[in-house]
Length: 266
Image (cartoon, rainbow, N blue to C red):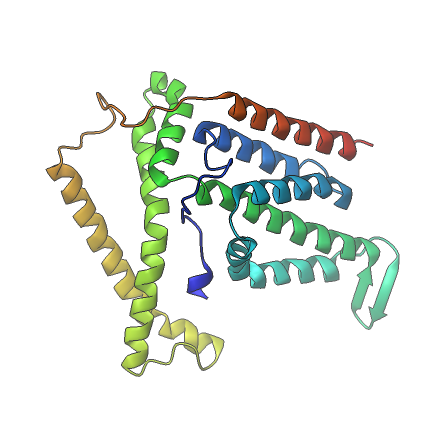
């Protein structure tokens, strides 16, 4: 299961999506999220689905990587669908047995919520898949530059977000090593009742927290040795420059968003 978690990973490439300005990609991701939450009908998600498929194809990243990002959340999606299926009582009754009452509105809302969450995960994952952590940090800092006038620690915030994304794959790998080591010592992590497995998780969480704190301390020491003192006076190796393709991609995203708004109000 842990191997299927691809959050925070970057897949190098030279596709059109990879070559877009990261500042524009962040703005387009925000517009994309607004697009998915514009309407409350299945027809509204068709626009978001078309946009998602188009972006995935242009990124040239295999679809199986996006499916891996969705797979760990399948239990959550199933629970969400069942809650909406059994608790929504409006609409015509499709199936009724004792206290179970499944309606048309319950089915529609369940399908709608699952599709929305899947599209949200795929679209959000595309940002980290096609943007390196360093470039993403620079883009976030540039977008939040106006907040510096309010004494907001923009550079420090962008750095923390970048480090968090960078260490997600590292922590996943560390968790797998700890689980293998505990199993070799006879720990029963995948067997027994739910409460038993929950108690056995302490044998994984405690070493993981200790390892995380140790890595954080080593990182802080390394940054101090390199005379890191925040964003004041720092220069950048790569300067972010926009191009016509960035504005074209942003315009296409806005057109899709406008189409979703129109469909939602028809």
